[in-house]
Amino acid sequence: MELFFYRAGKFETRKRWLNPNIKSIVSFFNQVFCSTDILKKYHVIIRGGCLYKDLSNTNDIDINLSSSDIESYDVLENDFLILQNIANQHNILLDISWSSISISYLYDMNLDKDNIYENLEKINGSYVNIGFFQKIVNGDVVLHIDNRNELNSVGEYLVKYELKDLMINAFNRSSYSKWILSNKAPIKYLEANQIISGDYSALIGESNKII
Image (cartoon, rainbow, N blue to C red):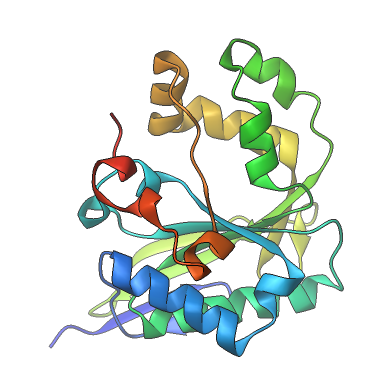
């Protein structure tokens, strides 16, 4: 029997996750809506590869929380943990972040891709994500990432960046972002509230693949 351990920030699991599917994603957000106040506290969107690739080829779900302010980084970190634990119940791995400006707003702003880097330079905001990850399989450490340092560490396991720098870096290194830029494709995101209301067409069929 395989011995498996994974840590992302405060979250720990010994259960391997599965590729997400429509049912698990919808069930996850419905449970978040029914059992927490997170969707009231933050503007929550899905972004990233799950909207461009077949879900069977997607390892995780990228979600971004945004709000103009937060109570504290400890509260934010605990909200991350709540979401991670609920996702784990649905066999989903989350890649989770928070920003002081909604990523959906930034995506909408950058539909004019000829000026995308000029637009990104104008961003004035903060971005926080998890800075510590570890995966152990059968006693072997197969993943160990610690991005924390004296300048960017907030909370126990969180790291903070300038949103402008992070977005520029993402567009420079992300394969699907490069594809979007070169093909003038729309930058997709999906509101959590759309899923709650039953509109998750962006996750179905050809609409969630690069075309």
